[in-house]
Amino acid sequence: MIAHVIFRLAIGGLENGLVNLINAMPAHRFRHAVICIDGHTDFSKRIRRDDVPVIDIGKKPGRDPRAFWRLFKTLRQLKPDIVHTRNLAALDALVPAALAGCRQRIHGEHGWNVDDLQGSSRKALWLRRLHSPWVSHYVAVSRDLRDYLVDRVGIAARRVSLIRNGVDTDRFCPAPDRLAAREGLAPTLDRDSCVIGTVGRMDPVKDHVNLASAFISLVNENPDCGHARLAIIGDGELKSRVTAMLRDAGLESKVWLPGPRDDIVRIMSSLDVFVQPSLAEGISNTVLEAMASGIPVIATDVGGNPELVKHDDTGMLIPPADTNRLAAAMQEYLLDEELRLRHGEAGRRRALEVLSFTGMLERYVELYESRFPKRSIETDE
Image (cartoon, rainbow, N blue to C red; front, side, top):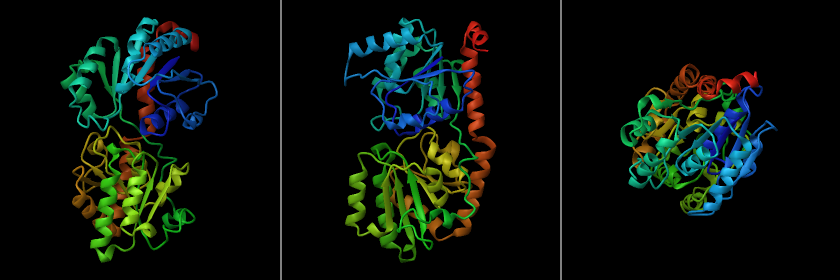
């Protein structure tokens, strides 16, 4: 069994990747449990297997010794062969896991928080160093995160595997008719419009405020961009602020903010341009999904984004928090359909060749199998 320990199972890139991984791994070979430090939402229903328990520890904010005790007891009961923790918030599970007799402890780094955009926090650095003796092996989802672990935290390179996220290129693929895929989504997204979209949590680190500012500038200062439309799919603390910004600018008729949606495959295939405006990023699942869908991507030049988007080939890389550069990039795509098509096709090819979900899955299966004790493999088979 693999016990996956995360902070909270809710809508998010890390969480979506975990669910996809569990659903795709051979059921006859791997059993799973998901342990949530801070609970879960209905997002857990996306786990298609009915043999995967989702367990809430219910940790209170700050130090909560009772939560460590509950985690210890849970792991003693589950007796997993591997405990796989993810991101800084789950580091606290490593010591209880060791005390519970879990000998194989993998820790994954998937991205940065808004209060530590470049991994510069000395507290976070020392927490990672303090917990490193309790980690059997690390996984980094981007070269940027791998280099941080090796160069800054001081982890030996042999203890770190680079496993980038992958995308299901069968589910996410170019629509035979992009305009037909758009019909019925929202009156705002008519056939004559050019739709710029993004998908993800509306948290400060994703910087949707800058995206809204750039769109306002684009439309108000460029009369030839009147056909531009903006779709922001997702929810979070910034939604009300972004909605108010666009309303006050008089652009309600040009935007669509429906909140979370379950039809992301369809929505992605209906967009003309995808924007990832993050201030920091690990490896973005939504960027991968956009590329697989044949859509050009405008992404900030941070974290793992340059490992996915090739500037002036599959999209454009821009500095973070640069409203003018973002508006200019959107304008360039709006006015050049041939450029949109060329970059979108190049992104699709790159997704197929080097960023597939199958390749990622094989790497995780290989990693987990290398960590299972021989007795466990013989028993399961």
